[in-house]
Structure formats: structure tokens, C-alpha cells
Image (cartoon, rainbow, N blue to C red):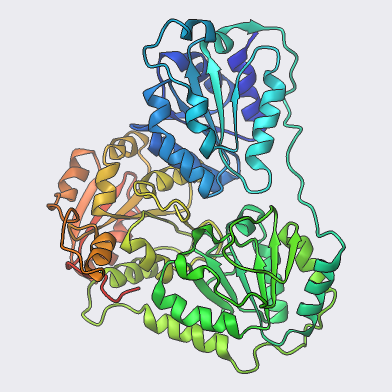
Length: 538
């Protein structure tokens, strides 16, 4: 006989899920067993927050919704940060929590609180599992997680529902997968076609929605056919190979980069927003162009951010709009005859060159980019290093640099790298972390040890919350609460069963990176950089 947990796990498998992550408790043992028996490999983590980021890393690798399992009470509460990240960073994450039965909760309060009330502000939907309606609930939950802008859904599973045998009929198929739609006829479509037809200086900005729609090939073909330069958000890096002369790289958090990109954008007579969500962008991307600017916004959802105006808004997936736009423009039509995009690309390359001194964070990132294969997947934690590495590290494809770009939370890079490597299993993976960010999830090095996967961890060691210290100093505030002592990270790596080494020059860094590629377990490269090394860097 089938249990409620079997139906939940079976529907996840039907949607393509093959992995689950988390920290089990007594209230989710039936779910844990069902996930395993349904063919979802479960990875034990040391903290639910890390489990959620590992699930996201897996989603970037195989395209299936991530699955995070947590017990009631503290387990559910521990995951709030990563659920909020999935909400803001558009990640389809199914969050399964155990709970006591409703009747029992009326008189038994130990570890009991309303999970749904806690999570509703940061999920697309929250469900309480009920016998007799599990198939339809899972269809709804998965469809909502994947529809439009993907995001997290929560399913609270009472113990009795998970463990009880049920005669409920259910299908081992996922019937409600979302379908992309094209632009509808109307005044906005006609305005968009007219703008693009006449444009002599078109430019495109693409972001997370284009990545989630797998629109890279369409965007690449479109930009190359009509010689349109492309700016992306950090999540959108690689939608067009960043080695392509038309690629102007990622943008959104670097004032230095913005100082070159925003004037170019405002010189354009047709600004194409292709799945661009400004939730990733810093404050000076609020109203970056005039109210009447020639902007075409291609979006899968209603935009309510208020960050900018658009002359024409097309509710559509990206690729169908590009097909329509291509019908009205001659590939030989002029595009940027003044060569301004090429000048900006060259200027940006010079602006983010390695340090003249021969050592610093920029040199670290350039050295590792040249030492590691082109298909390397990089992850970046939040902090000063993330802004700089996002400008320097060139991606040939989407999802080759993973990070928390909307919530910008610390402690994400290491588990993102681990999750991607577990699921995809082939591409080299490197996690860029600051010393404070690594301290946040240090225990996951033991997970790395147990998994025995070859993840490279590059930690920038300057014993400071560098980005916050820089902001503190720029606002003429005293140095308070941003400095800390130096941890012997190579010794910690050894204690956790990995290889760790201090690095203080580019030659050693390249050599150690090459050695790491031939190692079964993890490698920790502790790059000691000067204090205030990021001053003027981005």
C-alpha cells in the first residue's frame, strides 16, 4: 500500500528531481525513506541553510526543482534565509517540513509553531498536506514553483499524513509543467516593432528571467545577427559568451563599471530589456534612463518594481519576441557606426586589469581564470570579492557563475559549488569566498569530506568585512565591528580531510590550482591579500 510520503516523493521524481538535501528529524523519517525509495539521493548537511543552497546548485546543473527537507521547529526556522534567497533570486525550491498532527498541536507545544505563517511572506505558496488530495497538491506546488519567475514553495507534512497508507489515486507524471507564451498583438507590440525597425544604436540588457527560460541561444543569435551589444546582470553572465566582442559583461553592483555602461545605454535609441529583473541592481539603476526613453521590456510577469520606465512592455518569453523583432529588421541595417560599444568593452577590460603591484584580489581572479578550464563553474559569496570577480571572470555559457545576486546573502558560495558538483559531476567547480563568509559555513567542509568531491575553495583572507569596512570609511564613520582575527584555514582544511595551502603570489596560485584539478578531494586556497586591497577596485 502507498503512503502519503510515497505520493509526495513520487511526484517530485516525476518532475525530474533526483536529489534532496537537508537535516532530518524524527518528524520527517517517513519522508526521508520515501524520497530514497523514489530515487532521490539524499545528502545530509550540517545546516538547513547550506542544504537549500546545495539544492539550488543542483537546479543550475540539471534544471529540476531543488528539494530541501527539514524537521519541525528549529529545522524550519533555520531555513528562512535560504528560502528568502530562493524567493528573491528566482529559484524553484520545494521546501518539505515535518509537523505534528493538528489535533496534537492543540495540546502539545514543544517545538510547535505555525510554519506556514512564518514562511508565507517569502514563498510563492504554502501547502498543508492532506490525505486524499496529495496528487493535486503536488501538481499545484510544482507548477507554481516553476511558473513565470520561479520561486520556493513550502509543503508542511503532518506525521500522520506522511506515514499513513492511502488508497488515493495518483499519476507518476507531472502534468502541469508551465508553457512559455509569445507576445500578444496590440499597441505595445507595434511600438516595439517600430522602435527596433528604425534603431541605429540598439543595445540589450538581459538577466535572470532569460537564464531561467534557457534563452541563451536565441539571444546569442539575435545579438550577432544585428550586431547588438549585450549587458547582463550578474545572474545573466554568459547568456552571450563573454569573450564575444559584443559582450559588455555583467553589471549592477560596480560603480566603476556603471560609469562606463550607463552613458552608453543612454546613448542608445532602442534599449531591449530581455528577461531583465532589476532586483539584482544597486541604487543607481533606479531610473537609469529618462521617462520617455525608447525602452522595450520583455518580461514573463507583471513588473511592479518601479525601478524604471518602458515605452513598450511585452508580457512574453524572450525567444518569441526576438523572432517577431527579427521579422522587421534588415540584418544589414546600421548598428553603432561610432564604435562606442567596442570602446566601452576595451575600457572595462583595462579598468579591471590585475594590480600593477603583482598581487591582490584582481590578480587572484585573473590568475585562476587563466589556470582553470573554460567550462569551470564558479560560485561567489557576498562581499567585496564578489563584485570584483563578477567583473573579471568571463563565462562562456549561462550558469557558469552562481551567486546570491538579489538577496546577496553570505554563506552561499560553498554549498552552491557542492550542490552543482554533486548533481552535474563533471565540470570543475571553484567557490570564491571571503574569510568571514567561509567561517559562516565552515562545518560544510566535513560534508565535502564525506562526499569526496573535488571542489576548489578560494578564500580571500584580509581579516575584515571589507565591503562594509569600505562603506563605513566612505561615510566617515569609526571602525567598529568589521575586523577580526586570522584563521589558519589550511590547517582547518587538513583537519577536515582536505588539502589546504597559504598563497601569496600568482605563480604559486596557478600551480596549486592545476594540482587541485587532479585531486579527488577538496582543495582550499587561502589567498592572503593586503588590508584595504579593494579600495578603488570596483
